[in-house]
Amino acid sequence: MEEVVKKDILTVLQETIILIKDEEYAEIKELSNHTIHNASIFQDPDSVSIAVIVYAISKIMERTVDKRRIIGKKFSAILQDAITLLEKDMISEFRKAVKNLLKTISEHDERLHFFIEEVVKQARIKKGSKLFEHGISSAQAAQILGISQWELMDYLGKTTLGDEVPIDIKERLSFARRLFSKKKT
Image (cartoon, rainbow, N blue to C red):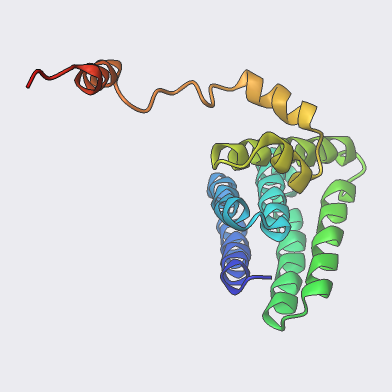
């Protein structure tokens, strides 16, 4: 694991614990977007897994009002264990802990089991769109996240991603006219 990625993941996990304690669930979702930057540069699956986990935690915390404190404490403890493993450079154990965290998220509550699985799936798809937005191909983004390219493309087709015109139309037309105008000498 790249050192810069490791430091960034540690920061994200530590901030997630603080935000869970402070009940700032919208901020947790924003934090997951931050890790996509490393995933797009390094195409790092660890960053993607953390982004998905953090996003899923934010959605679960937003929607489980009655058990927030209990769930928050459980997630915080597991995140702290992952931090400890990563700080000790126990990368393979850290990755096992991440897999177990994903499993814990999906198995946390039998009533939430199907909802959580869907949240994790949707989180992967949304994070795939962020990778795509950062210039990673849809095929690579799907592969990194363990989703099908069809699922990602279906989501991308429903968004306005790529519809934005970065430069004003008048500016583009003016530039094109200047570019193609012939100067007589």
